[in-house]
Image (tube, rainbow, N blue to C red; front, side, top):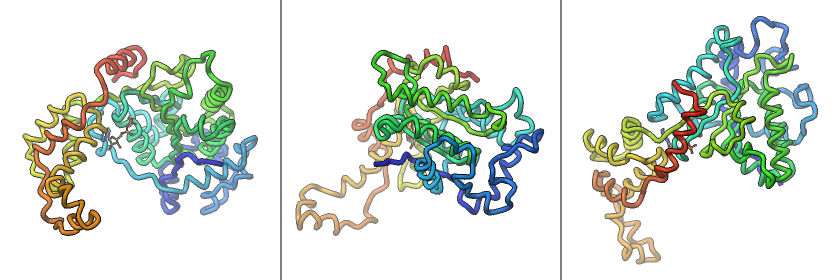
Length: 370
Ligand code: ADP
C-alpha cells in the first residue's frame, strides 16, 4: 500500500501566472533562449499548468504510478510561514535570504559563480525551527515544496525507496522552481557501515545520483531545485554527502531576544496579563529552552487559568458533563506570570549542554559562518 509522503504545492492555480512572472526569468537562462523548460513550453496559457506525465522527457525511466501520485499530491496548500514568524535566528535567516531569496528575485545577478548552491543543510538541536525555515523558504519563494522524511523512505517504501527518490526529483525538476525538504537526512546519508542494509544503500546511492543530476546536464543548466536537508545528527553524515551540501547552517537554541520574541508572538492572541518586564523575565528564565519547548511551555501556561475552574469532582457528575457545561467561557481568567512559573515545573528544556557542545564543535569545523 502506498503511503504518500507529504508533498505540497503552495501556489494555487490562480497564482500560477503571478508565479511565472516572478520566477520565469529565473528558470530560463537568458543567454540560452532556446533552452526548453519542458515540452509543454510554447503552448500558451493554461496548458503550461499541468504538464502531462507522458510528455516530459524528464519522466523517462521513472515509475509512472509514483509520478502520478506525487503530481496529484502537489496541488494542496502549504500553510504560509513568513520571515517574521520565525523568532530569532538572524544569521540563519540572513544566509537563507542571500542564498535563495535574492537569487530568485535577480537571477541575472546571481548566475555563474554567484549561482545559488543546490544543497543547504540545516543542523541543530530538535525543535529549533529547521522545518519552519524550510516551509518559509518554499512559501516565500513560491516554489513547489516537497517534503519527505527519511524514515518513510525506508519503512513505508520497502524496496521502492530509490524509485520514490528518482520520481520525486523528476517531478521537482518539471515543477521548478522547487524545494525538496528532507527531514532526518542523517538516516539517509550515514557513513557506510557493514550493517547498512542493501535497501538503504540503494536509496542513498540514488539520492546522490539525483542530487548530482540537478542542473548538471546540457538540458538542465539553470535548473532551480534546492535540496534542503535537516538533521539533529550532522556528525553522522558521511563526507561524500556532506560535501554536496555546500551551505551548512547551524540552527541553534534561541537567544534571549529570540525567546522574548517567541513568547510575545505566542501570547499576542491570548487573553493574558503579562507586562513587558514579565515577558523579558520569562525570556531570561527560559534559557536552554528550544523554540518548540517554549511553544509547549506557553501551551501549558495557557491551561493554568482553566485548571482553576475545573475540578475533578465536578467532572465526575452527570457522566462527566455536568461541571463542564455549567462553566461560563467568560469566567476563564487571563494567563498570568504565576501560570508560567507553574508550567516551568512541567515543561523542562529538552536539549542538554553536552549535546549543544557537539553541535557547536561540528559548526566550528564544517558550518557556514557569517
Ligand atoms: P525542527 O528544528 O526540529 O525542524 P520545527 O521547525 O519543526 O523544529 O519546530 C517545531 C515547532 O517549534 C514549530 O512548529 C514552532 O511552533 C516552534 N518553533 C521552533 N523554533 C521556532 C522559532 N525560531 N520561531 C518560531 N517558532 C519556533
